[in-house]
Length: 367
Image 1: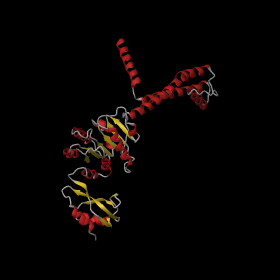
Image 2: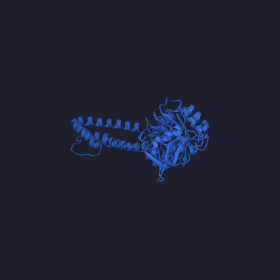
Image 3: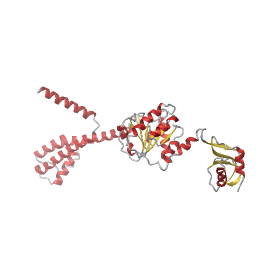
Image 4: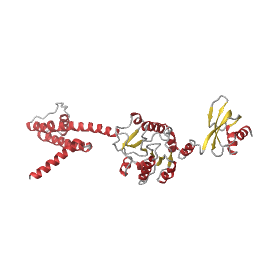
């Protein structure tokens, strides 16, 4: 008998600590509310039987008593009615209602805190998921990236969710004000990926934690390997530090792979808006490939489209812009625009750089 009592006591102590530390307040609020409804219903029936109240008066008396309003227009006159009111309403009902209100307030505060610290399940659809954050100036880069996304018409309404262990106290206010939310944790395991609603994401961005550390590619490959477990409709963009790993990243499911260029988050946004353009833009940052070249040649007055067509047909490159007589740099002018200047900018290949004399000859000849 003593052993049974000890077991019951241990279980009760255990349940007490659950009540003190548990976070399932919705269930607790629902249970308290059910008890309150039962008390109110019993009191209502008691008033109809003991005091002869009508149904409407019984409801009115019960509600004004339990909320401590007490208008006094309806009251219990008999001793049994008063005892029932004292027992059900004064001792239990008012206390239960106050406890429910307190639990609701605590629940709202706890919910807000969990959202801020990245412990909330957001249940998103058609959103952008950013996995990992740069170890150096990560918040500043994410803010610049989010600002570019918000400035892009086709992406401005997409919710953004970040999966990262780097913000235990929540995202910086500047980042949160852009509509970015956090899910706290490492990108490890199917459960963690499911928490960010990865299967419903429109875009998945896997960032390198260090733009100068080749080991970042190993972590990116691990994330991509985990993503292969899902049937993902979203477009996957991954950062690759080492060029030799690009083919491996694509083989593991990345739709686009680009270098981590922290100064230009626009590059990543372009990969989302117009897939493929990131490769063209990346090519401009290296000498081995296409790059802009300046040619100081006289450009007689003529239509830009006609001159550009001659340059392209002669295999001299792709015209990008020019400097006019007022020393203004004009990029990508309209084909029908009349141009007149002294400097021409061409996009040329590193192994096919045209001689300035050929460019000058092509520019000056009309018709």
